[in-house]
Image (cartoon, rainbow, N blue to C red; front, side, top):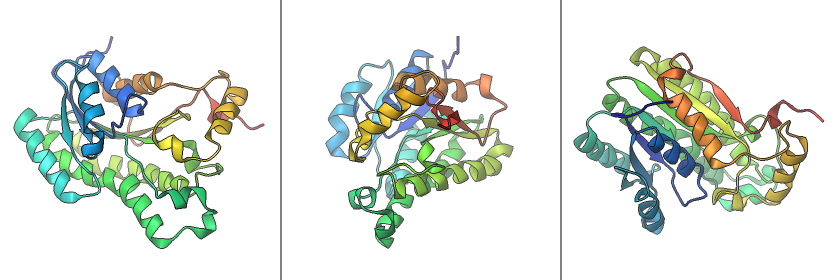
Length: 255
């Protein structure tokens, strides 16, 4: 059994009980980690606080990762509260709705910028703020999707952003390896999250996975959480810069 007692994990991107971030937070907490759960804005505060109350020693903090000043304020508070951090979970992604539903050719410059700022650059910004507090080494995790390498209908600019995110994981892994900080991504199969509601015909993607994946089903948040727990633990001490698929094997299939 993985034991994370005495470890502090910061989880970004909790929106509600359907969030992948929630599944990860549950698994880290079960292993004994102390949780700092971060939500974006006041609209999401109630759900975040309600869920955090279910986890021993969990506390909530507000932080919009697209605002550098909020990141700085958050990590100053985390330093004062915890001192040392061991795990960072970046479960954050966003693109304007028009950039998702419209033809990819119609992607505007501003929508492209926003998608990459929130979904990709924020991982760099959060990592830079976290590193001074990760004095004992540790793990930085983010979430990606198979749309980074294959075209999915109605995913559009998010697929391009996820490709950038995966490249960012590799470059951060190279940058932080000397500090014994590992950087990895989990490519989760489709899950009915708040963000997934913005993807047109999402149910068709779920059905395709059920039909074609070797396990003939979709994953759930806790299965992604289990992979995150492993990657956050010393059992994964030799793994960095990798994309780990948790998608019931869908990514290996052709026809």
